[in-house]
Length: 226
Image 1 (cartoon, rainbow, N blue to C red):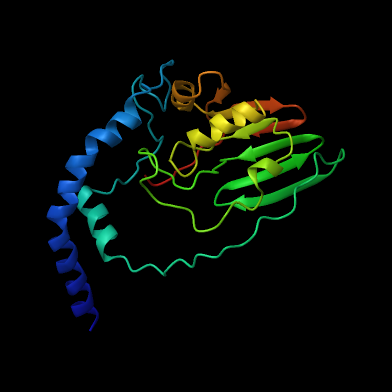
Image 2 (image 1 turned 90 degrees about the vertical axis):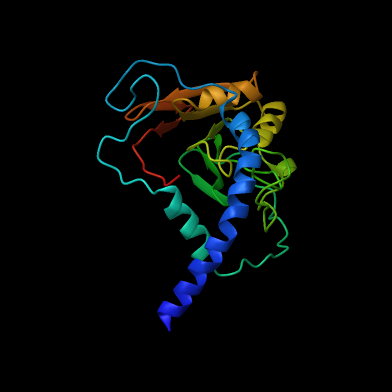
């Protein structure tokens, strides 16, 4: 029974393959333009940067295009349930010294408040996350805090540059409303500055630490499939 199911799924994704490739060819120029128009990172060579690309320090297994396509067309995920949850109440403007308050907003977006400093992580307030405007994955739930109800934002931490973590439209809104300092790994400053030139950005390499008031952001090695 299992073999028949898997075989059926494989045949299904193989039938879809020509259409997928046609779409990839048609959309590749758009995605490529959006992804690479900002240029790459320029910096000194290290044990994980060869002057052109970043490298993992240990052997890393890379999936092939075939692996990606098979995963995409044979997976059987549980359906997402869209719920119209109302946003929560507005958080306080700040918390007292020695206190910590963390509010979940959605996906990887959280509001961290400590010792009078307010930090947003990977803020996404857009309805879709994509290199091509409104075409792409859309959110199922509204943000847990309305953008208008955010307290003064002093710093923004961007973990990496996938579209569901680095939302340039939201960063532009934050720049206009709060002018926070963006703290992010090497290379992401080029992308951010290309789209939000006036944004204040500081970057760090593995092992670095950047302070924002009493808060310190540490940069640690991390693998994330891409």
